[in-house]
Length: 300
Image 1 (cartoon, helix red, strand yellow):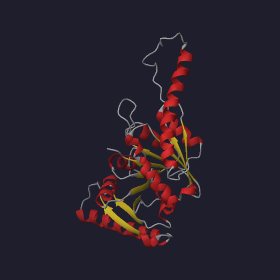
Image 2 (cartoon, helix red, strand yellow):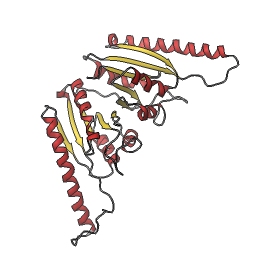
Image 3 (cartoon, one colour):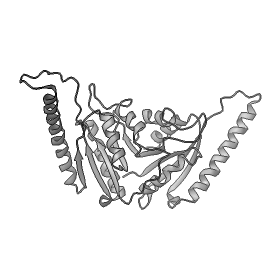
Image 4 (cartoon, one colour):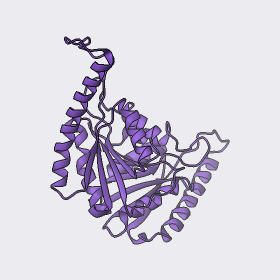
């Protein structure tokens, strides 16, 4: 179970878009939620050091008041606490999550405007690259999802590393309730062009050969997903599988955006080799392109 959740906030309404998602996992469960407000130190030279100290002290007080008011209006306020820290925002989030053994970080990919905004390429991306704690990313501009029924997309690539997300899929399903979760396993049939063994020994046209290779690739992917699907169904989970063809990141984003996926659960590393799923590759592209919330598990 996710017993300890860390929720970074920056005082903006955009960053607060995560609150319904936090409530969905915290309501009715024995979960401790920590709202972390990290204040960026002033890096502007001031005539007198005491001015810097006073400004930072006032910022701390304002952050404490903000978190106190926010928590007072939560349904799960008895299980929530606020924490204000001073330092680099991304570093503080990662360090706090590690030192306090948090189970998951839930945060927005956008925050307040200005130089310290949380955008892809800034705080969210830095946390994504540095944190060993699973991260649930929510695009701040998207409307809050309702969790009465959730479609969960789980991309896999055939590797044991990628399959490590399945334990998190089970945990999330337990939090939401098995009857309210539909799980779709997805493995992309990824063809290389031209195929390494083209032309074939038999007299086939390029179109015929490509059709043959696609069919063979799809059958291999489907056979693998069927084995995983059977394991999950034995645990009474509602599971199906799909095998799109093409570039992995594009196929995942395309499927998620066209099928009203409520949550994508995937690993940031997969199999080794040219098509591995590593941070900076498929996972990053899915974060950038998908409109659905994304639950990312970092595999070493």
